[in-house]
Amino acid sequence: MRKSIALFAVACVLGGIVSVGSVGAATQQQTATTAVTVKAGEFFFKLSKVSIAKPGTVAFTIKNVGHIAHDFKIAGKKTALIQPGKSATLKVVFKKVGKFTYLCTVPGHAANGMEGRFTVR
Image (tube, rainbow, N blue to C red; front, side, top):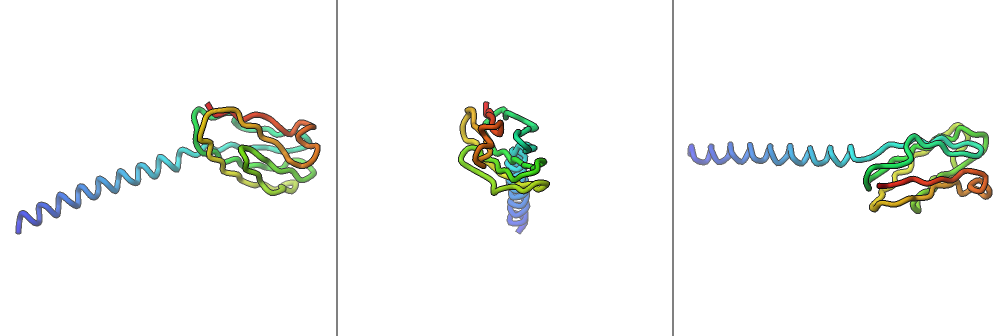
């Protein structure tokens, strides 16, 4: 009987350690997302960060501070049109290093300055 109780106690302790390890791993994955704020206007983008140190997830929060609708496209992902005064968030997973062009796809906007490069090192 004592042996069963001891084994049960060891199993509970080990189970707790495994659970704590799993929670730690989940927390690390959650904190791996980099937040980048983007202000969009006529005719510019201003990013709070223009690069990240290694591949990973970036949550771009785009606020349209201009007077006409804009969108934001990077790495094959794009927001819907963002109306003046409104915001949108775009999560992008960068799996490799490189330079990624971002732009507004509204005709003429990129040509007038709404484009740039985001670097993943």
